[in-house]
Length: 67
Image 1: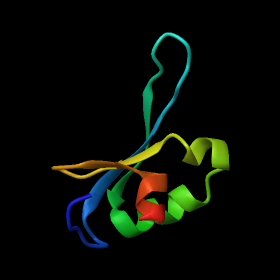
Image 2 (image 1 turned 90 degrees about the vertical axis):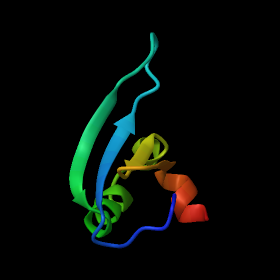
Image 3 (image 1 turned 30 degrees about the horizontal axis):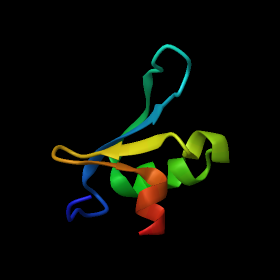
């Protein structure tokens, strides 16, 4: 993810891997810091499909936490 800050507005969404394509479900839209708190409370199988989107980038939640 490009440089950002805790109060940057992000979209936290889950991308399902359901047969036939899957779907993106928005879990939260607001400050990055709150999105990260919500994401860490999700079960591991949900975290596997979480993504954070800013106005100019998208990153998988787990990649952000590892990097």
